[in-house]
Length: 300
Image 1 (cartoon, rainbow, N blue to C red):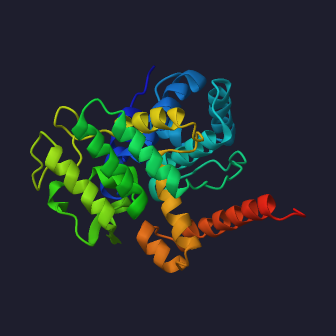
Image 2: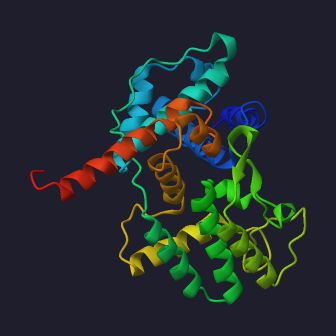
């Protein structure tokens, strides 16, 4: 697998994504992995080292060949569309102001609506995660974290980036979201109480500079650990596969909208840069109302 100068270009692009574009660690890892796969493919497809000149002279057939190769490995439409978007970004960076990015339509992706989790299911999920934890303080930690995701609409990365300086939780909390954008979210008393219970039980010191949510050995809690706990609990409770930590954020938004929240306020609470990102929840709420109507109306 011969990258040639492409390896340096990819590293420079990673720094650009981090410092100029302020992309999240998760996004950067996905983008960099895509660029590395693409360059490895090109070294075989085109032959020889992959450098700036080769990347600047690509045509749509090169991109189609790459996506066909990835699809042969089981890549779906949504993932293929994300990879194509990452490659366009990479090629624009490589070409600079004179960038030539091959024109190519991405695969058609059917956009599904995020399905909310019922409040009772949220609490049942959080309680099961706590009850089945190996240690009491771990259970208290996960319970507090899940309540925070649902009660304040946080992304899991936002919650795990909080430090001990947030304690004790008050009526509001300052959260740093995507691209370093900060917002203020309200905190429910039940969430503050759960966080205080976890902090009191945690065997590791929670300092102002250390993560608020700590792993079993005192290091930062990893999102994969949380997802695994939720996955086990939803299976035990026979909840739908869509019941994930991120689904709790969707539920927060949908339930607020159903309760009368306006879109602009919801946009601020969720930390969306564009109102268009928030408007999907109007469709979610309408879908929920239709479900209720169809199950309750005698003529439906």
